Image (tube, rainbow, N blue to C red):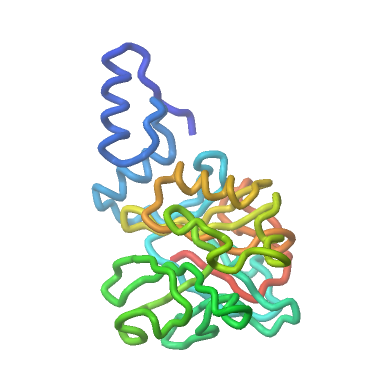
Length: 249
């Protein structure tokens, strides 16, 4: 998408006012981020999910997601999907909190058994609203289980960015290394499935701040990070076997 930018002082003032009003980075460049936030605030329907490149990250923007606990399946069979959060290497399933379709595939944090560390979650309530929290178990969520459509856990970003507090230290600090990562974020009533190429966890957090998400978590990274969007730039690592997939709808 070619960005629209103000050229005169008055035009720049208008563009910056537009961006400030819709809550995106005020950089005098109206591009995909500004378009998405404008459509969201206008309540426009029928254009989601959409595969876009926002702030140089391939992403899928949608109104809702379906978290799926899968075993040894790749994203190639799931349109508009991204790799999920932490999973066991033996293929036994998610190692991070996951609740969907009335069932808990994993009810405790990824480092619960290593010191009862909490993890950050993003959730969708039954009324369709989104939220976030830092919890040790699903039981920590008020109204669980009946009040929730889904709950997805990962490493906290934004105000929850403190890897050591969530047990990402010592041997587990490998998660913070420079590699490809995936992110789940929510903003303006929309969900963003983001692929962050070649970044450290700190850089991923900075990118989440650039997106200005209301809530965001870093999912897994390294060799399993994958996305399957409708555009060629967002079809990455689709053949890698996954234990856990998040699909847009």
